[in-house]
Amino acid sequence: MDADLRELYQQVILDHHRKPRNFGPLTAPDRAAVGFNPLCGDRIQVQLMLDENDRITDVHFTGEGCAICTASASMMTESVQSKTLDEAKQLFHGFHELLTTGDDPGEVDLGKLSLFAGVREFPVRVKCATLPWHTLTAAAENREEPISTE
Amino acid sequence: MNATPSSPPGIAPLDVERIRRDFPLLKRQVNGHRLVYLDSAATTQRPSVVIDAVRDFYEQHNANVHRGVHQLSQEATAIFEATREKARAFVNAPEVAEMIYVRGTTEAINLVAQSWARPRLKPGDEILVTTMEHHSNIVPWQLVAEQTGAVVRPIAIDDDGTLDLDDLDARLSERTRVVAVGHVSNSLGTVNPIAHIAKRARSVGAITVVDGAQAAPHYPIDVQALGCDFYAFSGHKVFGPTGVGFLWGRREWLDAMPPWMGGGDMINSVSFQGSTWAPLPSKFEAGTPNVGGAAGLGAAFDYVSGLGLDRIAQHDHELLQYGTARLLEVDGLRLIGTSPKKTGILSFVLAGIHPHDIGTIVDRDGVAIRTGHHCAQPVMERFGVPATVRASLTIHNDRADIDRLVESLEGVRRMFG
Image (cartoon, rainbow over all chains, first blue to last red; front, side):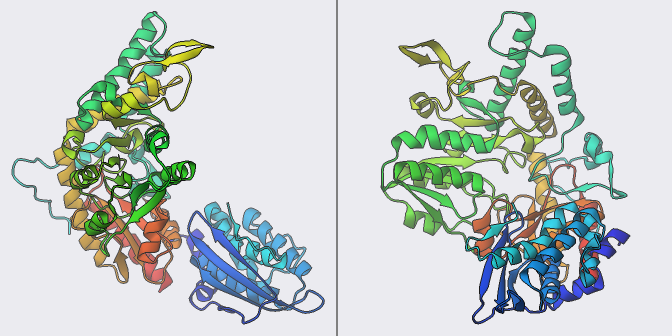
């Protein structure tokens, strides 16, 4: 097993894949959206509960995806908990930078999300990691049409 | 594990070591390992003879075809037409004029949909397609259905991926105009009984259109014995270049069909009072074709027939049996597509591990396989999986390649524990 693979499939990532957190539907979400990757068939739904200041009070996801997609969704739900939609958006921006350049831009604290730095060595997998975040963005904007990575 | 495969008397086994040396790309390393290429169903690699033929064409004969009296144009035309004749022989078509150059199978099916079906279909007419079709044998029919008011209906498949012939019979009626079927399924490997299907279709007055993309590299094709009306295949699946392939059609249909695209090379005369069409096959070949590709494809036909399609079929069959047995040893592996009549396509899923992750990990071991829905989303839905892993076998693969795949899959299992 080579080093790049070990970095991609770290224990924490595999653990979130096996036991995804905040997995399953919310009964009455304030906002929701569906995201789809037509290349691999991955499809996930992200649901949000918001307070009056657009702060995320609960976030869940459902669906089926690869280990990177599922772990990314699971860790996303933990990272954006109690953040405002604007803060979540900034976090996604930093996360995206990390995946495409490998650098932590330092503007926001990525926390455990920085474990995804290894994705950079696998450009075709970047979309697996960003699908949950694109779906979260769509949910924040209340878009009804499923969003697609393509 | 590596015992020498036994062949029935009369069919000499392929010399895989020697064949492998014919393919320059197979000499390269991928991620530090000897490349094991198990994605020939997506596109085959090219032997030197094909690459050389393309180079020779551009270095020695390059010119446009069917025009110009100069020497080069005559040579280019001769090469182009020689490949057409080889294509005729390859599928045993009655007449060389029935072989239409196309970019590939997809274009061929669109041609039939737009030129045969569109002028003929009426609202309520039915087009039957099998559930195992590649999107390229579904979407062109949906487009023409939208244009004409016809309806596309799927024919069911069994749990092992065999076409449900009772369902075919149940759906055939006087409303059926077209039965569109793959000779071999790209996602399941199932070989469909084309002769039977064509006979049943004809009994209700429907035509049979065959997507032969996955059959062409695996065993001998005889369109006269199959009894179909159209047969399409791509050069790049039979070790030829991309962007060139053939549509065979019965002359009675081709003569009656309007051109599919207008332009140069497909006319008898053009004036603003109207134009008249060239005879077959030029009527369907507007514009400058892929002549360099045709030169390469001619060499590919020679290469394949030199090996012998009966030997290729035998090799394919033996390797499929070995691969099936070995893969089933992998814990949690489920084969998708286990029809008794199959070619060398092994589609599978591993419990709890997404095909995308498998593809990434085995690639690191130098094993090239395909993951995804294989442009056959109805198949994925039928078997309740989002995607599969597909290993496809060809002439340069051997048991050691399968062993490498299995070892790599064991590594995947260990990683995901």
